[in-house]
View (cartoon, rainbow, N blue to C red):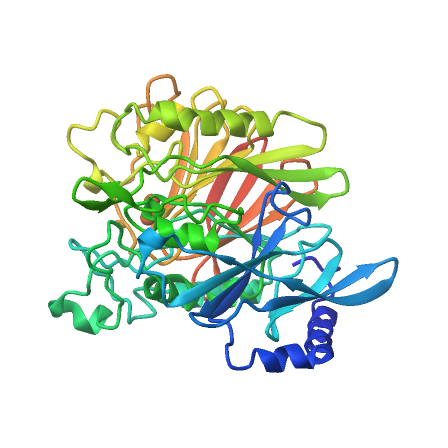
Length: 477
Ligand SMILES: [Fe+2]
Ligand SMILES: [Fe+2]
């Protein structure tokens, strides 16, 4: 955490804030939020770079956000109206049990709460701890069921609490939130018997109850403690969890309909999964030093082949390159769910895939020649922790170990082939097939970071250094 951040003082202020507006709290006492959290948003959405979301039970009214603003040494208490983010009518009834409310946080906010519940109110003036966690949901699919009832087999709640205990300044979650894509099989009731099944008759698999089970409840400690940069994964494709993602977690206004089902010949069909616009988030790291995050939507495309999807995907990477042009004091990371160059275990290799064992061929091809401005690429998608170095290119960090069923523990020899034509062969990689998250801390030199890999109990199991766009990791001894 930033040691200059007055956490205790803010907590006190938030309590004061709640007490200062008792009528409002009482008014809302019958309809407490199911969840309330703060998303980091592009400045084109909110001047402060932050939006607050409240997930309410259906039938409630949107609450107000109570904020304390400090300007010229004076603290002023205000209320900010929240507006409904309306689920598309063609998703009915999957999201009819909740009301999602959103508000832009004003600038100069030093404390905020929703119906008496504190929410993260600001990014600190200097960010010095960045949490990273991804691929978090509990897998319930026709081909595999994870034991969602076991905190060891699905440790997301512990990971979420461990991150909250670390008190980072911001968290980056780069996709694959939603894994409850099938009804719990009769033979697996002990593992997932309480899991909400997909709503029948709809061309997608997510629902409000599924998002509550997979995200809002287990991630509650994280959601309530730190502003979140959210990135869409392929599990948030429009025929999977995309509708809930855009309703709940995409920070931009007007994206609720991005995955709305559309009429087909015999009923509703899922919307096409196409990349939404790339945007940038700036984090102040030190005076005169900014970390720019370019957020690319890589929910679509093929993992194993270069396809025509690249013509849809490449503009997203082109925009990322444009947004991160070299500028004094700026360093940049690319955030994209599918790795640009990450590789899977040989046990998962698809026999006739031309780029085995590399994954996400469409992303690799789409971004070719567009990565020169980045110090690092942060992705998930492969359910392990992995770092890969390609000569002359930014290192790839994969953190797909946030709770979803891990990939096999063996079978990761350094590939002797390039990820696609046009790329070099890797010269180094590190793999850790174990659950956890990471905390990145900036070092004195521009572009230099230390990255601590931690297990669900918060214990460091490996440490990495990033310098000159090159990652190096070693297991903790
Ligand atoms: Fe995944
Ligand atoms: Fe994925």
